[in-house]
Image 1: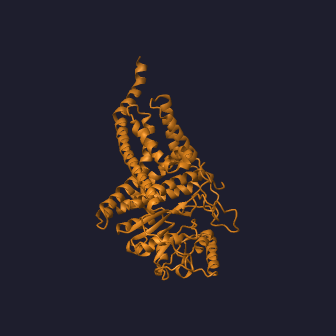
Image 2: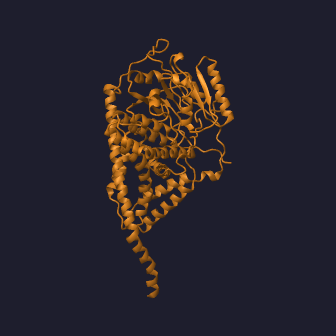
Image 3: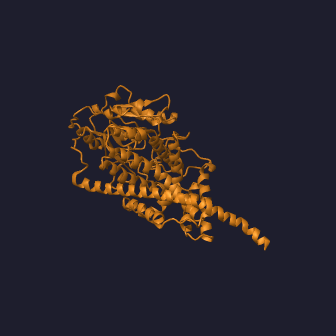
Length: 523
């Protein structure tokens, strides 16, 4: 009898601690997550309705701005000097820029090369010299340092005397390939609408019509790139479309857009205080009263990062930079006197707080920590509307805008939950401005579609990696935690969450061992 009594004492103590301390804290976390979930689903519904309204309005009256077609050179008569700059590198992208249809005396192709590999630099310079020999007005620019990274390169590029003669600047990253009529389609919006500072076009990872040189369209390289395409399609079709339609705000994507140079200068130019110099400039220009236009019908071919490590670096930079910019600009937005309360509310609440702070933190905290832990705490029950209805609603709203990818939705959910761990860490790093807040790692692209077809490489070949570098300890630790929670729920619990939690554990394990995306040789 004494032995039985002594053995039950630790269990009683554990139950008392769970009921008296763990359960109240977990219950508070649940309701905090439910409140954030309600904000997130309301924002998603609002953006979804706005994007559908934008699509309907576009059928009736176009994009709501004056646009008149431009004749092809030599008949084109540009009403004002309208040269453009193209800060780009690599062979096919430079070729696409040089092939743009525009009067040759009114365009400057500027190649900003910040690469650190001498071999790549030599290839890029030779490519520029070859185009210069064909009477193309092309400038090859390098710096003696990489201060400010992309923002520093853009700022330096616009300081050149010839660049200061430009009224507009079109910006493309190294892996983007515009069609020859890109300027003929975008420039009329800027020429006929003096209040527009930016025309942003859509990145395209899949084209339904035949086009030459589709090297950058690599959405179908692996499952990870297909999932990325789903997320980017939602971003452009819903977030960018709704922001443009409501004249509220949407961010510059850093590439495949045309800026009015006077708007850049009036807004303070390119700043390197965060890793999202594109969003920084867009916010400052918006606070000056400039208007932006997103034109989804104009598409520019691009390449997605196809290795898991490259994608992690990209997502850290985007998420951390946006959160850090929120920290730096919140008070400036609040005290601004040049824009309406509606625009300030949209910037602060919708664009920054809900989408850049709440979304990454909630996804990981609720679905990867709180729900699995609640399976081990019977005193805590999560309402079905928060556990099932809200996630289902968000998934359906995403599926509506990605009808061709409905069959990938389960994989998208699991993949996004794993990535939420990195996005939450990045968001907190940006909000708290930790030492990693300004980490800049160039997103590695491998030129999937043409790397075997060219005589010279597009970029530096991927180096073999140590096998240990493919193992991601944080993912594996989370997988172990989820496995414990799921097994407890399966054997002793009564919540029946274990199926969902087991799937999560599998996803974290697969990605923890690097079995996602394309793989480089193992040394």
